[in-house]
Image (cartoon, rainbow, N blue to C red; front, top):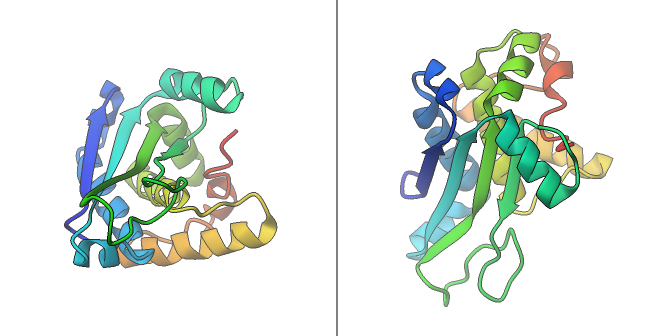
Length: 185
């Protein structure tokens, strides 16, 4: 889904350590949108847009405390933007304005780097996973209940496979560490 606008703001210099962070974010975001029907919106003339902030632990901790009541950093936060007359995660209908900001994703470099190291993965692979995870939240997916979590993990795995990222929940050694992705606490 190359027509989706992915606005990236780099708020922490540490992201320079990943030479291709912006390309990873764009590819993962577009793959996730395509997997959940974003192509239908584009085909109907509705451009989708997502804002991604590549931040750090202090930024994400402050946002997590302010908006969720958890005074600690986490790997990714997602803030769905409601469609006009709808709720967060709604797809734009044919009679709505052509551009639709689906929401914002904020990522914490230090947490992602720590988790990647513990899992023995490249930071870019874990970044791709968390962007996909965040995008699914923007489209209304959740993992509060076991069934929801299993569905969301299966969707993430399928999307990531399509962009060449190994299963973050598989038995390849990294699954247990990456299963914490998106615990959001």
